[in-house]
Length: 110
Image 1 (tube, rainbow, N blue to C red):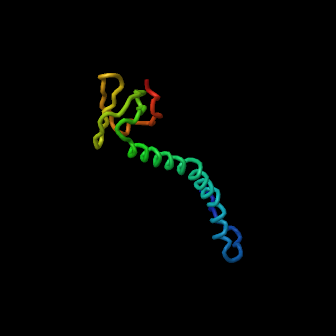
Image 2: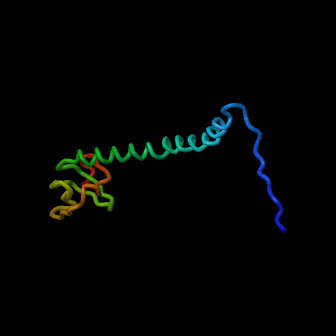
Image 3: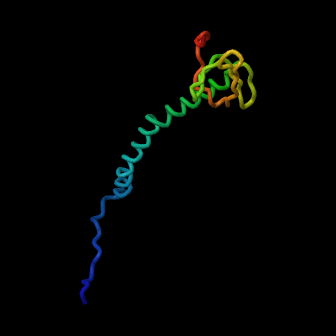
C-alpha cells in the first residue's frame, strides 16, 4: 500500500571485458599503496632486524657494548642466551644477548 514497487536498473553493458578492466582499475590504487608501504616501511625494518641479529651473533669476549637499559660495559663471559658485562671494576651484571643495542669502539669506556 504505502510502498511502491521498485524495479532494478542495470548499467549499460560495456563491450567484451569491460567489467574485468574496471575491477582491475579499482584495485590498482590498493595495490600501489601496498607496494609503497612495502618499500617505505616493511623492507627497511627487515633490514634493521637482520643487521641487529648479525651484530648480536658477532659479539665476542672483550667487546664494549651498550644495552637497551643504558648500561655501558665490557663483555667478560658469554653464554647461549646471556652475557656477563663488567660495568665497573669488580661489578658485573648479567644481561640477555638481545639487550645489547650497540657495540662501541675499543677504548670508548674509561
